[in-house]
Length: 65
Picture 1: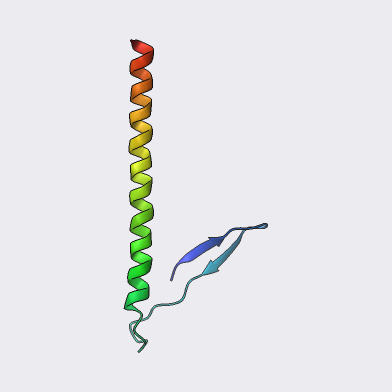
Picture 2: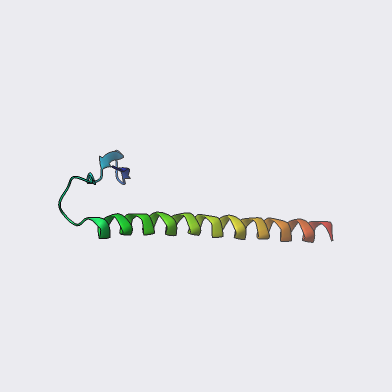
């Protein structure tokens, strides 16, 4: 189960569907979509951190030079 923040005022929390091994439905595709989205968000954040670090390093070099 995932807990998510719903945008809006006031902010609200909601829960995702419950994925259970005893459920006979084929939810593997849904689970994989969720995991893929989590990985995309994580890699996007890592790329942003790398860009920020590079920008800061360039600014420092310009200030020193």
